[in-house]
Image 1 (cartoon, one colour):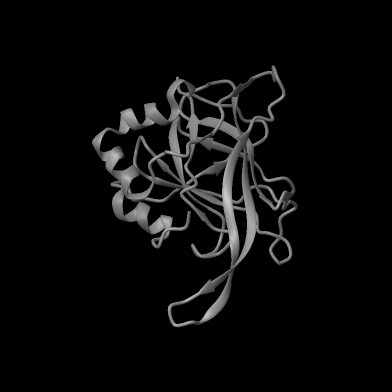
Image 2 (cartoon, rainbow, N blue to C red):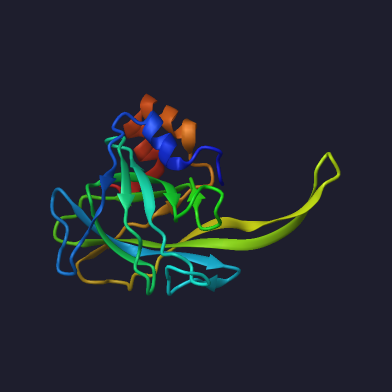
Length: 216
């Protein structure tokens, strides 16, 4: 979904916190504390069935996607750095809570590499002494080329990518010191203005609705 208003502007305009919070990388040896949870996983473009790693700065390579998400506890937008170029992996440290992704990728909202409001939430529990595996978010894109005829009779070919989203659990069973709490994709998840309305009315209830038993 590509709204007319970029996700970053919408977040800044409506959420009370408004301060962009950078999300720090977690060193390889770090585990979760009471205040911060270490989360791992992957985010990858999969276009026409082909995964686009390794990522790169110039075409034909695809850029490694960064991400923005809204913290439903504080209302602040969080900025996540680009995932690893080799395999789309990440290892971040986050305060426990629910984070609704507002945008993924680089460029303006009309670019094929930019995705707004994918209806995905990161459910981050408090889990001291462990790491939390969130899952592999696959950005499943299909390219299209469609003939468009305007009311004036002008014809042109519209090209782009239409996305679907899948969260895959790739965590080895019984990994020592690791808790699995998958990201969730909900087709009916509120986004944009509707998300803000729900958040203002009952932030705790919205978090419970989106993450349910994944939080503790």
